[in-house]
Amino acid sequence: MLVAGAGIAGVACAGELLRAGVPVELRDRARVPGGRLASRRLDGRPVDLGAAYFTVDDPDFAALVERWRAAGLAREWTDTFDVYGPDGRRTVTGPVRWAAPGGLRSLVTDLADGLPLTVERPVRAVRPGPTVDATPYAGVALAMPGPQAAGLLDPALAGPARVAAAQRWSPVLAVALRFPARRWPDFHGAFVNEHPVLALVCDDGDRRGDDAPVLVAHTTAEFAAGHLAAPEAAGPAVVSATVALLGLPEPPETVYVHRWSFAKPAPAPDGTYHLDDSGVGLAGDAFADRPRVQSAWRSGRDLGRALAARLRPTG
Ligand SMILES: Cc1cc2nc3c(=O)[nH]c(=O)nc-3n(C[C@H](O)[C@H](O)[C@H](O)COP(=O)(O)OP(=O)(O)OC[C@H]3O[C@@H](n4cnc5c(N)ncnc54)[C@H](O)[C@@H]3O)c2cc1C
Image (cartoon, rainbow, N blue to C red; front, top):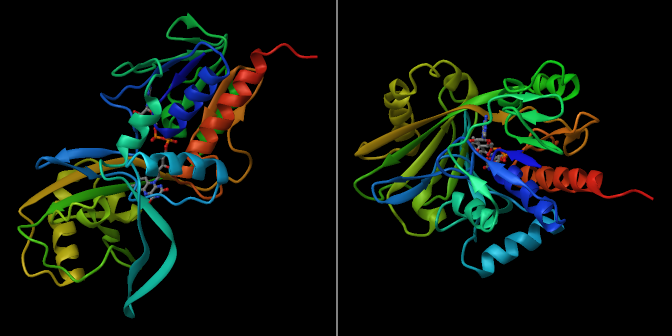
């Protein structure tokens, strides 16, 4: 079996196949696993530039998270967020948001431990058979955003090609802002409603637990869509919006802009993965009514189980 994409969905899928005794190869085009659980080292410490946090309500995922917590890899961050809107600021409580002291990528790295992962090895073409870049496999899992999978799939693979192409995704710019010191109101994270630039601002030092003076701002999809060609040019607008929102006394010393062309899928509540007779499956957070880390993990796990079941003798 080949699993393409070592985000949390692909790593969960490959792990499930391996546990079922199925030989598996896991490939990612990037230099490191993690995908949108992305932690980039900036000024000597990892900063979470993809998912801001994760929440847990699936008992199986909760068991994994408990293992991460016991190992010191994951920590309960907060159940309290601010909400900024046209009527001002208020505080809301909700589900516990989890974070990772070493950055969220460290959780995928942990799950990938012991898996046969090759990085910097993009899949280029998936054809009937299924074959991947001319090598035949018993089955293939594409664990990546649908538009990226659609670009690999031969049109003769009509089922997965149609499902991948039908997904609708929106972009986000994630902007890391490092300040000289922590001089902002006491908060963990803030949802920002009806704002022309900002959708979310999180205190990265608070969530990671080292109190570094670093904020990460996520833009609205509309703002990001206007800056995909030159994301760095969006930095000044995000800086001034964040400084104004939080009433900060000084601008950041360093600014880093990360572009997510495919950040968030439209919810699709029908099933946790796609797999048909072609032997090419699709997994990821797009197969969920609430696209998020937990649903991506569950999607990959479920596709891995389904692919493994196909190799078992029936009767
Ligand atoms: C800005 C942002 C904020 C978010 N906030 C939250 C949040 O607060 N809470 C939450 O729960 N979720 C959040 N999410 C969503 C969460 O990050 C995703 O649900 C989850 O990480 C998706 O995992 P995945 O494995 O499905 O996909 P991905 O993480 O996208 O993994 C896909 C992988 O496929 C690889 N790949 C692509 N093309 C190829 C190829 N041709 N060959 C080989 N490999 C390839 C990529 O390199 C990548 O590693 C956020 C996402 C973003 C971008």
